[in-house]
Length: 270
Length: 258
Ligand SMILES: Nc1ncnc2c1ncn2[C@@H]1O[C@H](COP(=O)(O)OP(=O)(O)OP(=O)(O)O)[C@@H](O)[C@H]1O
Ligand SMILES: [Mg+2]
Image 1 (cartoon, rainbow over the protein chains, first blue to last red):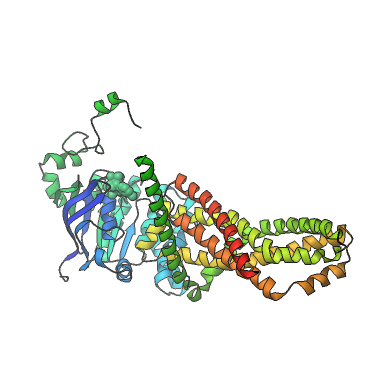
Image 2: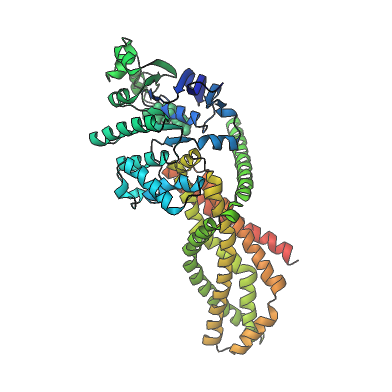
């Protein structure tokens, strides 16, 4: 099953929230050594997909395999062993608010490896240097800007040198210079360390610039897939709408709802 | 009518489910608490955190409670010419009853509420989720040491409470009401025994620490991950802990001194 170039394999994925199907039969592959991008409108389930890959949510149907293991079927210890080789950047950053920047990045290392303090320090400083925040190491998370917090979270996500890194919206809230550095960083980490990366993002240009392969999801299904060049050349109306950032088109911009006129005239409910 | 029945049924089911969840969590907390054997520092940090939170309020309350006990005891006993025994009355009330109970109530309000809010906020801001994704079990790493800390801290704080309370009683009885200091101490010493008095007090306070830690953590861990949800869980945690402590106190007292 393993040994091939596919690190994570998702087949006929079905997942439901309340009565709404977030995924209704999605297939995708995360190939080793590549940066795979997942794009899609807000609320289309990108974060949910990462949580399914990380085993924090269980699918209602279909299969989610990472490194040849069926994630939903793993026992807790097996799942934890797999997660040691995964890094995840949370959309909210999710830094530990009671720990300094340095200790946040050191946390996963301290938990999993018994390193002498000088070595640990060197490792953490290198990770912080990579995101340009070595000088901010003694700040507390509350003293960081949103963009800085996200970069610290990124440093923490790669602290254990994972095999698979999942970035949930790494570019949000970054200035153009930092954005460029982050693109460079994600690409370099991926290529030099031989990682595989999943990048979830709305930022079309940045994502197309960094990705080897792109999946576009909307409405619980795969809308399109292909290399950035293939997507750019696509003449599907839905893909064009997404890439050119237009509100009207086949992809609904709104969360499913009854007609606006109907609801305004109806005058009932919240 | 059916609507109400339905609501009642749902509330009952929800209640049972919550109780089941709490018991399951307790099992995992007890198993997880072994982490403090491997990493005692986690326990020390938490005992320090909850202990320093509650120490001042507990010492001050104990002083006043002891002083009131001294006054009330004196006025009651003096009619029987037994005012020398006021030390005994103060000490027994504190060690057997007021020390453990009032400590647990204050602990719930001061440290328990802050545990609930801390855990609830960590959950709401995805800190617990991100810990899970780092292959670190938050129940073992974050919740269990706090539970163990409550188990250790409440008996220690109850001991402080009783000690400071006795001093308060002494100040009033000897300093204000003119009871002989020697009689105060010697009566107390001959009447208060390690077993059953002190031991029972310790057993009570361990039980209260157990309940206070368990409820506070459960409320935080299952709080709805919103500002509103966390604040509601915090209040409910204090209320439930207080009721549980008082109920449990009656039960334990009935068992111990029958
Ligand atoms: N805990 C939850 N309970 C119920 N529904 C949820 C929950 N979390 C997410 N959802 C729903 O699942 C859908 C997908 O959410 P998800 O967070 O995966 O979207 P997303 O693609 O990451 O969006 P964004 O780009 O805004 O981050 C949303 O429509 C949301 O309403
Ligand atoms: Mg998201």
